[in-house]
Length: 158
Picture 1 (cartoon, one colour):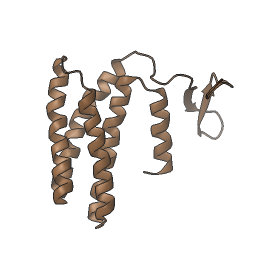
Picture 2 (cartoon, rainbow, N blue to C red):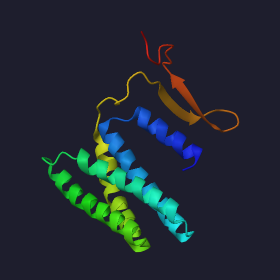
Picture 3 (cartoon, rainbow, N blue to C red):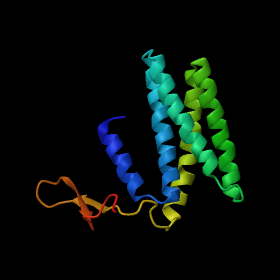
């Protein structure tokens, strides 16, 4: 993952509520699955194992975060368990087709997690972070990010 991608994920995590974090995990699993396929195509088995393990951990966390009392969660659990199996078997067999299958499954569940995250109006999980706004500015047409509500008390206090 590039430093720009890490910065974007960090920003998203700092502003997300619980449902938003689940949506971010779906994106992380898709990105890691794509990176593992790329590593496998470049015959870098160590990097393939690293990225496939990261994707597997993201999917596992999604499975554990589901509230199975909800009907949609039961359906999502089936998809996520199947994706988890595919990643695990793909890593053990160094099989690209199983990793591709897991990526297809995760792209299938992505809209559901995104819709749930957009409908969830709970506050963000992280406290004591600035609200970040981005928008086009007049002049050069660049995208600027502005932090609002910056506090001098951002860390551990005694």
